Length: 88
Image (tube, rainbow, N blue to C red):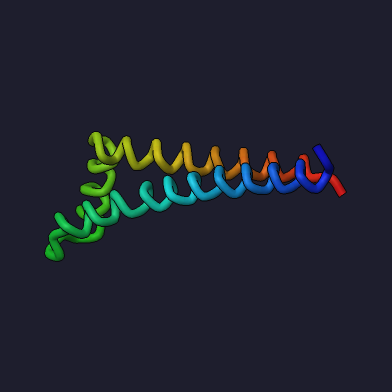
């Protein structure tokens, strides 16, 4: 396999992993944001709203969103690691 073919293969693999990672990061940010916006009571004080947000992170959707964030960032860093294999 030629060097340019190996480089293209590496770039495509990194692009795929980075796309998956970005998607998981967006899910990790949007899921709690939509959930909190849906159930947010505008009469709460700032400290009460923070307490509700922290309580949400301890529920199943909160754990799922945190897991999606962690896996997304891991996939992004894996993609960066693959890009280091590019040859000149």
